[in-house]
Length: 194
Image 1 (tube, rainbow, N blue to C red):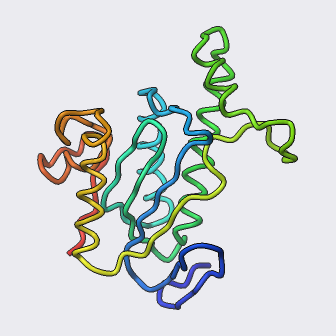
Image 2 (tube, rainbow, N blue to C red):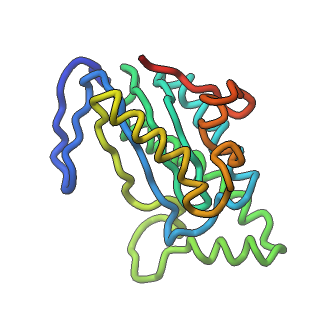
């Protein structure tokens, strides 16, 4: 069980992560081989719905997000039921199963065959799975201040514009921008934090 007020320093290569200190986490991960799986509206919608379901199941807050064709970024406030790694793992597992099932069921479409080939692990990888949808490891950054929170929200909301996917942040429906600026909860309502 995750203890929200106890400090954990997880000894892993890369930046240190601190869990259980009652603060925000900025999470991101990319698809394996940067496959543009989330060009599919079906996959994007499933990612958003799954995020909302996991929020209810695991009791965490979603403060912001953006879903791009080959990666996602999310700003979350974990609850006592799960730490950020557990949340990310469940999100990636559920969305990966959905993506693979749909690709395999639609092999008559060249785009599905091509995408399935893109996420197929090479024979040199000795792993029980034959496919990988998300990279082995994502990125988790502790967010300690309102200034850093706002910086990450602005970065996420402007990511589609910077990449040329939208002219303005509000043109990209798979981010929290519409919630914050238009009070639009049609895709996924956010949990505001002070």
